[in-house]
Amino acid sequence: MAGERGPVRKVRAFVWAGLFLFACCGFVDQKAKAEARQASTAEGSQAETPKPNEPQGAGQALGKTDQFRLNKETYEKAVAYSKAWYRLYFVSVGWSIACLLLLLRLGVVARLRDFAERRAGSWVLHGAIFVPALLLLLGVLRLPLRIYGHGLSLGYQQSVQGWGSWFWDCTKAELLNLGLGLVVALILFAVIRWKPRTWWLYFWFAAVPLATFLVFVAPLVIDPMFNNFEPLERKHPELVQSIEKLTEKAGMPIPSERMFLMEASAKSNQINAYVTGIGASKRVVVWDNTIRKLAPGEVLFVVGHEIGHYALGHVVKGFAVFLGGLFVGLYVAYRALRWVLDRWGAPWKIRGQQDWGALAALLLLVEVLGFLGEPLGNGFSRTLEHAADVYGLEVTHGIVPDSSEEAARTFQVMGEKDLEDPNPSAFITFWLYSHPPIAKRVEFAHNYDPWGKGEEPKYVK
Image (cartoon, rainbow, N blue to C red; front, side, top):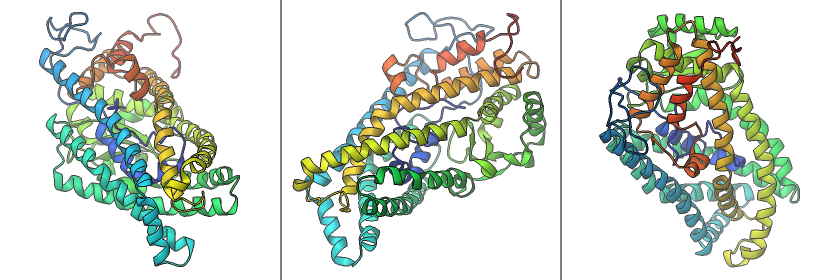
């Protein structure tokens, strides 16, 4: 539901550049970052009339939420916070690339490989030593920027998670990354040894069921490792009844056992809701902050937006696009890896693509391809999010009084409390935003009225 803070990636995003190895090796870490950047909201606040192109807050409150407005103090904080996150994103990408290049050029990767080969007899055992060592080293090198990011969230009151709890979450994420990374790397190098010229295709075939399994199991196993979940009906039966009215209108009933409450308030001041999983694990998740801090009509719009993701099959569509990007990305990585090793393999002391040291070169390519593919994935995501906004407006129409105002007000409060950039540049929006900018969402929600124009709604007839 929420907009995203650009500097960190979302995995629900799943990784649109398309390299499965990156998606798996960073699965939990990216997911934790994603949750940290979800846009939020709290209690309502004064909306003031802005002057064009000036810090907002100079005018008087309006009866209708027709534009995104911030007072002067909040405007300045939002701009500063957003710019800090933008810088952090680009610095993080550059730092990851620089670390991999230095580890390769300084011979650290080759020495790790040699150490693994001296300690074990088979290539599988070599990998069991080398892969966790490499991933752990990269995790340590990236830790300072992650610490800075959490400090930034604490400083701007977006997070309430203490450092001890945060480090424990980081530890769990790192352990999961090591385990998943090892499994994926072993599969990858088994395929490379078996089919050195077409490994990208056969690995794609292997990756499809593994990726499907991860999407299926994440809500059941991984998510509960970081947050507490319980059936929504247990504490909020009245909300479930209201949601049932929405699903009946949509003609797509969602069983109450597919609705869950997440205890987000233990770690965050933010609000959110989302759809996750696939098949039997598919579910709608509402954060407890959402229910506690929003008015009932606003909560229903948030849920209506998520029902839109559910009804419009966005999880499946997103997963299909991911697999398509994966197919292309693996082929590009195969061609690029051969070129890179031909050019720099000797000085890096990497003997070929079957050498475990080639994993570092492949991760380097993944970082570059992931960065270049970011705008493609985010552009696709913005399309899905806009469609879910439309669906939320339509499914709440006639059930929530003045549903357009409720939706616009929801976005206003979300943007204000999450310190959303009130006017992101076209470049930042193109590269980093997986949701439409909050100001456009407010304006769209206020103006969307096919019923008043005698037109037929797009999704909910």
